[in-house]
Length: 320
Picture (cartoon, helix red, strand yellow):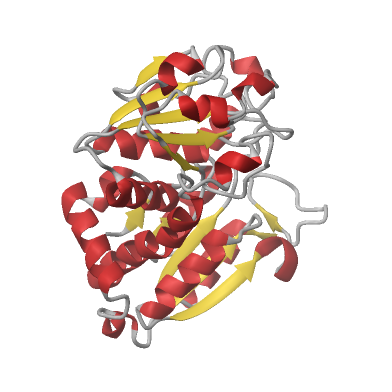
C-alpha cells in the first residue's frame, strides 16, 4: 500500500477488519516490521487524537517517529506555484517535501480544507504534492476532504458494539459556531457504504455532501424520521459543501439548534449508541446527558484510532 486516502486503498474490508481485531488482541505482534524505520508526521493543523494515536501505533510497530508542526516548528511554507515569494513564507513546499522524504520511510500528512476554494480543496492539492514529490508512502491523517483513519476506527467501534448483523447507522448534521470541513462526514459515509450497514444521512436542505461520498446512502431531511429505529447515531457538524450552491461553499448557512442531539432525539432510536469523532462542542453538537450516557461510545471510538492506524502503518511497512 503506497498511499492511504480512501476506503478502496485498504483492500478487502473484511480482511482489514480481521487484522484490526488481531492487532487489538496483541498490539506488539508486528513490532519487528518497524525496526530501524522512521515515520514522519507532518501537521499543518492542530491535533490531539490523531497525533497521539498515530505516534502510539508507530511505536507499537517498532518505528522511530519524527513530528513536525509546520506552523510552529518550521519555516512558513508556500504551497502555490508561480508566486513571487516576497512575503512571510520562506520555503516552498516543493523543496520541503523531498527534503522531508530524505529523513523517513513513511509520511503522514494532516492538512485541513481552506473552505474558500472548493476546487482547490477537493483536488487535495497539498496531500497530492506529498504523494508526488516525497518518494515515500503517504497516508492521510485528515485532509481537505477525508479522514480515513477516523472512519476506519468508527467502523471498528460499530462492529464491536452492534447487536444485529446489519445495523442502521445515521450520520446527522448538528449545529456549530464555526465553519468546519466535510472531511469526517465524507469519510464516514464512504466507509459505511463499503460496510454491511444501513446508512442514512440527515441534515438541513442545502448541506448535501458530494455525491461520490454519499454513495448508496439514503438522505433524509426530517431528522426524526432518520433517527427512528437507529442502532448508531453519528453526530457531526460540517459547513456547507457547496454542492447545490457553489457560492455557499465553506459557509454556515444554518444554525438550527433543534438539530442538537439530546435525550429526546435518542429516544427515537432503537436504544441507539452515540458516536462522535471528538473534539465536540457540548450542548451545540450534543447535550451533556447524551455524551455522558452509558450509550455514548466516544471514548472507545477514540481508543480505536490506535488500532486503525496500526493496520494502515503495518500494511505500508509490509510493502516497503
